[in-house]
Each structure stands twice: as structure tokens, then as C-alpha cells.
Image (tube, rainbow, N blue to C red; front, side, top):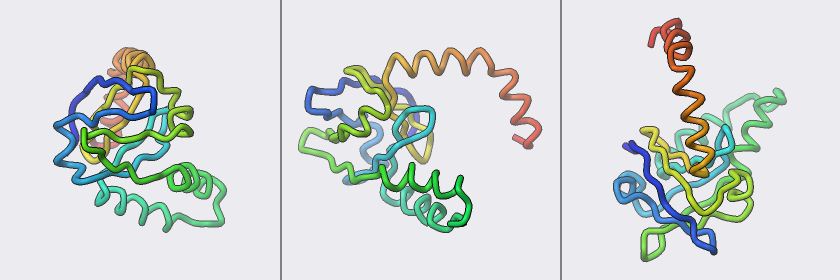
Length: 143
């Protein structure tokens, strides 16, 4: 289970340390891909396999399905840990998420998101400001 917020620093080569609390849940490596809201998604291999199977089962004839599958699968790559517990975030993913030196890992149970820290602060501020409206809509869904 991946929970919590952790701030880390991206080095000049694009490597970042995985939060120590995430390492057990991720195992020996992970899958990193484009996420939504201009962040990156980080999955344990087991969780990624579940999602990937759902993605490839989406209807090929629907343009939105094809686009989402491309976003998630074409951008994905293995993220192996080096001896210091870091992963390399490829350049194309760093650009996609507009990552600068300071990044934030947000644990969301079955995945982690990697955000540029300034963007994460802004996203949280907006979301927290709309929390009552969000709670009301979730209540309509039975949550």
C-alpha cells in the first residue's frame, strides 16, 4: 500500500530516490508512465499488470479508448532501482510532467504519483478549496 506525501530531489541525470516507505510495496522495481493532470504514475509490477489487462480490453474502435491506451502504455517503462534506491525518470516523462529539481511523491494506495512540487502545492490548494463540492458529488456515487 502506497500512502503519504514525500518530497525528494531530482538529480541532473533524472534520478530520484524512491520514498523508503514505498520500497516494500513496489518490490524490486516498478513501472512508470504518463499520468493524468500532468503528473507521472508509478505502479508496482503486480498493480500495473492488472491495469494493463483492463486497458488492452478497451474497445479498439473507440477513439477515446485508443487515445487513453496510447497515453498509458506507449509512455510506460520499467523503473528499476539502483543501488541507492533511485529510479531514472526518462527525459520524455520529465518533460511531460514538467518536473524541476523538487518533486513530490503522492501515495494513492495502489499507485504513486510523481509531481513537480510547485505544481503539487497548487493542485492541492485548488482541490482543498473545492472539497465540499467534491464530497457532495462523491456522495451521489454512494461514497
